[in-house]
Length: 135
Image (cartoon, rainbow, N blue to C red; front, side, top):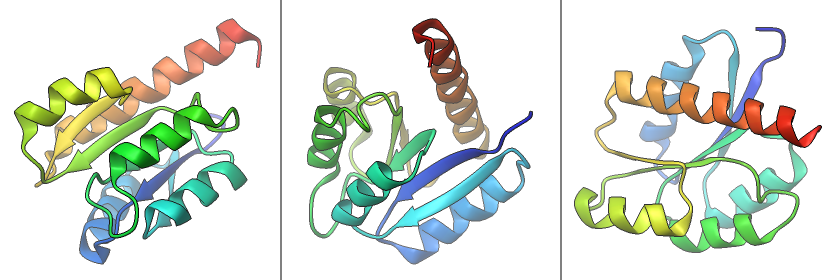
């Protein structure tokens, strides 16, 4: 791959950020940026040209559903794919996530193969949509 893809992980738990950072570091084409709160995540998503966001639903300041709503309502961040990664009740959140605009939903503890698959799918979809739109 010619250019590294920036992944923003919005997660308040340091151990979870470290784990996902370690996982992403195994892929030479991915770079992880971090945000500890929803507000920091919103600011970082708007200021950095990120290719994908991994979002914890349970954040201390703004819940993940509201972070997603704000991302989708901002023209600067509306087209960034967002993968939910949370320890919440999966069946309920999976059905809600489809309606709310998450690209994918992953539960903790993270399944490495499933995470890699979700990242690659979301990045491939984003690349193909950018080519179609002429960006």
